[in-house]
Image 1 (tube, rainbow, N blue to C red):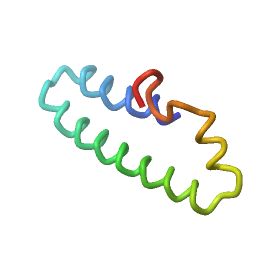
Image 2: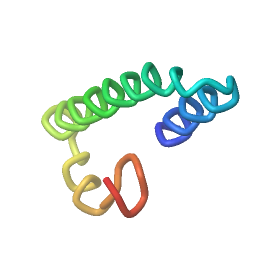
Image 3: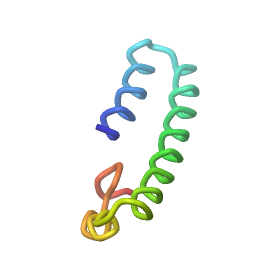
Length: 66
């Protein structure tokens, strides 16, 4: 779902035919990655069993990247 959201932002900017729309898309993606990192840290701290799951799941947002 998270990867799809990132792709939708980029796809929407390109579908509008405006390179300028990539700027808000990049800002949204940056905020989304920031939020995802903090969400992951909170889940590892507060949700029993999530730390083990996170160790087994290498990639959280983009396969082979992060």
